Length: 340
Image (cartoon, rainbow, N blue to C red; front, side):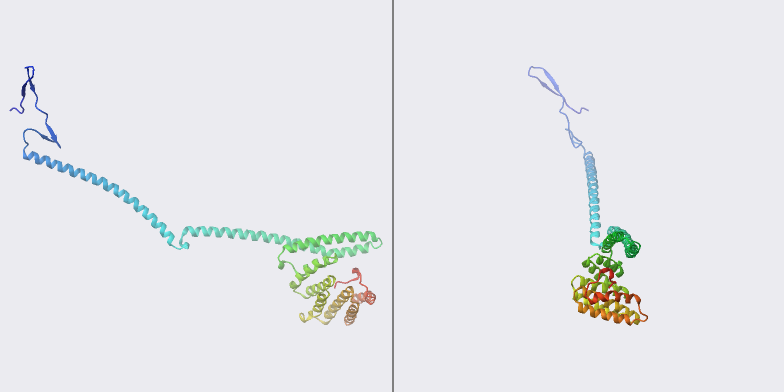
């Protein structure tokens, strides 16, 4: 059976040629020929096309869904991160572990620094306190050494005078260093007696203003009878030397009234204390040019000395040495004075 026909044609030159049939065309794999296909072939081909389309759609859907799932996972992670951050912001600071760790570290560092500084400060204060105690011991021993040297070199006044000058210079240096240490130490680390020792040394060298300042600082710290009465009388004497006689008199009156604060002292202690107060007051008034007041206090000092039983020979000697000077209203030399 012939499936194609050959077409014979004549050329212009009279010759003849045989032409092949035109090529067949195909649409989606379905050949199109001059002869019609059967219906079953057409249906089969259509089913194949439908199956192919479904496969392509499923593949495209899977690719699209996979990309969508990946993007959805990324978004979910970002949302979780934001939620964690927001939850850390909303909760109180003391529930945040990082905050607690940071604060604990800061507290530990500050505590260590403070305790180290306190330790260094305590050691520094201990060093100052030790040095001050040694200086005051030396300062208290110098007058005794001076008196001994004066006795040893009594026949050579030039040597005795030079040695006394050296001791005085040493006392001034020690007093200056002691004053510097006292200013560095807290007030409660310096006793009233220490203030008194430095103040008395400064007064012997003519620094009455600084001496009075130290005595005023030391007076509130006096916790016993001897310290308090000594500071009051010395401060009264300094006030007279500084031209403040009224303040000095008030302090001498305070010294006479001290036994209202210490009522349990015996009569001998009372009379001897009043004797020393009146002697100091007498000398202060005479030095201030008030001879009448000075003689009156000297007379009262004699009465307190006479009331002592047994008598005190040192007091009697002082009265004998000063009586002529008080009568003539002459200011006694510092070497003849007892401590006020």
